[in-house]
Amino acid sequence: MKFKPANKIQDLQYFGEFGGVNPSISDSSTYTFLSAKTMFDTFEGNADGCYLYSRHSTPSNLYLGEALAAMEGTETANVTASGMGAITPVLLQLCDAGDHIVSSRTIYGGTYAFLKNFTPKLSIQTSFVDITKLAAVEASITDKTKVIYCETVSNPLLEVADIQGLATLAKKYNLKLVVDNTFSPLSVSPIKLGADVVIHSLTKFINGSSDTVGGVVCGTQEFIDELRNVNDGACMLLGSTMDSLRAASVLKNLRTLHIRMKQHSANGAYLAKKFEDDGIKTVYPGLASHPSHELFKKMMNVEYGFGGMLTLDVGSLEKANELMELMQHRNLGYLAVSLGFYKTLFSAPGTSTSSEIPEEEQEEMGLTDGLIRFSIGLDNDIERTYEEMKQCMVEIGIL
Figure 1: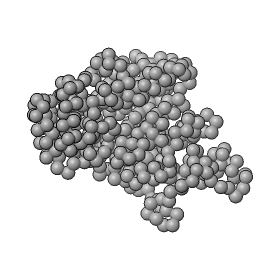
Figure 2: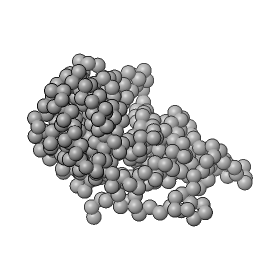
Figure 3: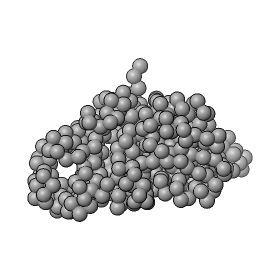
Figure 4: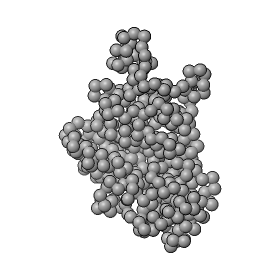
């Protein structure tokens, strides 16, 4: 039977303490015990249904983790205080001093900075490769390699990883394939394609309202238990704990993700086609001109579309900034980082979310000054939006 990620969320049933249709929020940092023995057992992880301290776990966090695990098709999940609070513990849990990571060269700037600048302090090295070339990935694997790391759809260039191909390589060399699926929730299910661990920044599409920072690690029960271990678990000891109130808020928004992703995708596809027809250099996985269009089609859960992220190259940083300022002035979106909001968000990643990547490396990977990254919103009248965006481009000489 075909995997239906939204059905898995919908099929979960939670009741609150007093019969509420939403689960009750445990607004406590610590929990009482009727016996000292139960406290000891809970600390050792041997007392199901008992809670000790909120850095370890809370009912609200477990509800959200269960729903996200259902969405991704994993045994369980652990929610964290941010996307980086999910990424960094996973890589530190999987790697020891002297180990090696093969990573996509185009990834979120914070992840790049962590791998390029921080993990070498721990004697963990990373090779950055063109993840779309499996031969290059395989050539970078050494006897010290422990992890292949990629984003399903890369930030900001929207390169698409061949997750099945990467999973085959990971299994061949006994590695773990870790996939950040932030740009493509519901559209792609990496675990079903062979990934070992799936990460999201919940801040983005999954929450959808730009009011919460959060992350999640979806994986096997064994791996999540390792992350939570009180003696050497990276999530436990680094302390990237999500607040219970935020977890409850994200869970409520998660229930409408399938509706929102369909609209983000429909709007993104419409604008991408229009702008490409206008002669603007447009990158969107749903366009036949995208080099990995057929690969994405093969991997995707069709009903959720190709996502809400697209890029336009308007030729120069000066033109990019002028256009973004004018679009914001005309109330067509916000000049802001992040993504997944109901309103369109746009930024020039070379000087914002990818600024951690040195200019020469940006140039090598094709990240130009004039590139604008768009997170397309939930506009009801996308035809009107297009006409008004086009008018802005005409006024400043892009069209």
